[in-house]
Image (cartoon, rainbow, N blue to C red; front, side):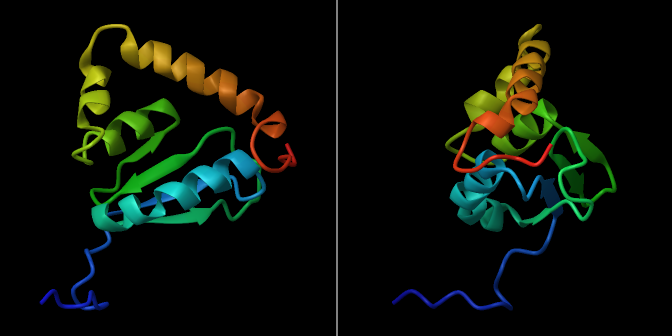
Length: 119
């Protein structure tokens, strides 16, 4: 019989993902991925300054800070089902392309998702 997961057996916190808590697209994406983040030891919380940041940020346990498309590749490599996508970040040109696509979506995110951003 499988033991229920307790706080003591929960994955140690390895990083924190910061996102725009006023954006329906951002909030919806984080809510859908929260169970996967929990297995990775990644907490998620909205920016303390509201929607003033242009892109999501990830602070990892070693103190490094990543943003935008780099966060996508970094986290994708750590989940078994998305690891191939994460490895595309090492293919020449892919990181640049995903970064540009991320910038386009981020600049138009107020029109996407369940609610409008305040930016």
